[in-house]
Image 1 (cartoon, rainbow, N blue to C red):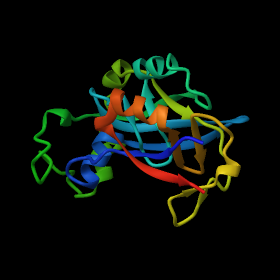
Image 2: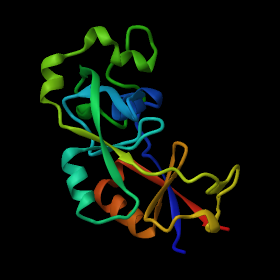
Image 3: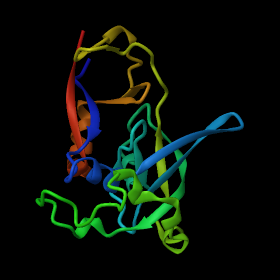
Length: 190
């Protein structure tokens, strides 16, 4: 078995504030026999890949690019926008200790208050897709960096709950294609 890596968000500037600005917040709700993911985020800029808690979200352009790489175990489900707030954070000084401004309440999530929703901006935002990776229970020995070889389904990408792992080939591709938005933690086969 090849090496596997947990896919994690890159180090956002400004702590939790940067995390919200980069990744946004997702919700998942049942819709008939499937779940629908909605995202609240800033715009107009959207990184090609984001990791709001529990999901990996990609833009339409990035979805096409990764789909052409033919990774096994990876499918996509459309994502709906819930709240889009105009904040041009990508031009802020990423080396600064603080973001250009804080939400009035001081809470990072409040960058995305529904009252600030910009419907016109939302209509112009790129289509988003959530990675749809079948869950495989018991892949990682919890509390360790050990990967259970016998439970692996043999695909390039696997998931257990809200944790996603990529094999070496996919990790290299992701790092070359969108590395500034991601980080990786090696998981050792056991």
